[in-house]
Image 1 (cartoon, helix red, strand yellow):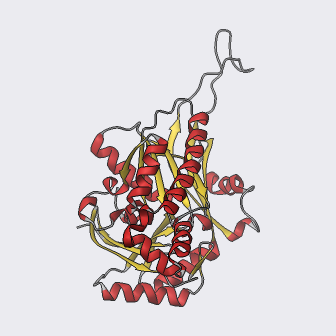
Image 2 (image 1 turned 90 degrees about the vertical axis):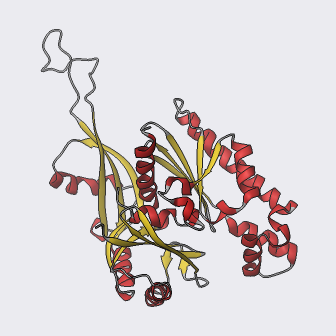
Image 3 (image 1 turned 180 degrees about the vertical axis):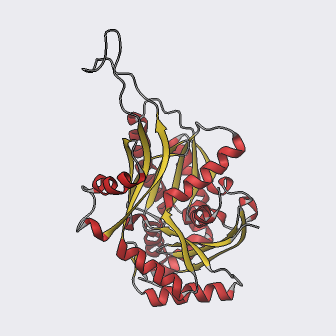
Length: 346
């Protein structure tokens, strides 16, 4: 029997917990985060956060000692790397130097990890090396393609401490893009299509993130510094209420507020920024034939926003819950896809 593991995704607005056994979601729980508990991707109080997870698990009958943690984008560096084929020992030595333009401080203050995507085929060079004989062509050394990550050791130590306070051990941790790769691979198993392109749009509270993939190969992420908080501000002004009540209005569509003219203007601004990112991607990848976008995050439930994005970008828009096995049976599944993807077995 597959082991049960709790996917943990801590955001600015909500904490999402998904209890998974193999590929089955047993429980999915979301609770509001206390104000200012998370700043710039970092948890302000480890003690309070650990207690919050422990209490939430107890109140919802969640029992497991294993956790899979979604590392927020602000706390991790991710990079596609192509390197000559080398031993694991050589890779451990060389990988940190791939991040020299990203990290600050000493290399020893960071942890580095990688996933081997493929060994690239040899390419025949047009010229000849000095060792090549008459009529022979030199071949490049074989290379391998990696998805490499770097995270401060201090962040991972804090994360382990939080989970210990909640009564769990950290089994695995990775950035959100790895959660999506897990879900993409399961979708590929179902469809048999290994070449499909994926645009996964996370409509978050503080920011919107557009993740691009070719098959299960991560291409890039673009972050828009706009999110649902912008809509909260619009509704707070319109109803003359505080920002927290405005957020409740937005998510419950109080008095049809999601369709107000002020919100429609904000949707159009968001769609315009997304269109610029998509155009850049297509320009940079002229062989792209992307047709589909998958929505997740809190904003995925806002129908007028979904419609504006679909109409402006001329893409087929789907809920990311369709990438999750049994996702149609999980309430508000689009909010849990990162936690679920991190915990599922592929």
